[in-house]
Length: 130
Image 1 (cartoon, rainbow, N blue to C red):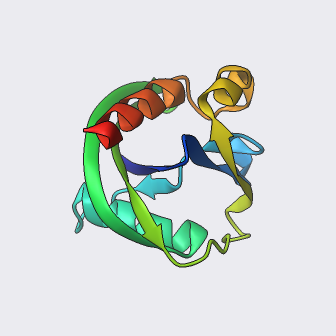
Image 2: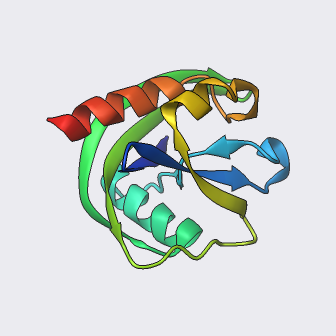
């Protein structure tokens, strides 16, 4: 189980570039594994703090995405929200961060960590408009 956060600002989405070997150079949302003792929302807040050094504010559940990976099935719990603080990357895990437009994402599918990222962005944008 994984919790990811889609941050949206001025129609752009924040992605982080992975440093770990299994996903080296690929772009994804801030997030990570859900520990046994925490809820998906708690994991989302913890992972955002660990990876980009900001606090998750007003998290809003978007959707759960069951996906199949090379390692097997995975449940991805996606949230949207705002953050407080200034982004400071955890350089052990991440190489970079950048705000991308939806059009940019469509043109970089091979650089995204998962096929469902564009769908998740669309769902998060729709949720943010509610």
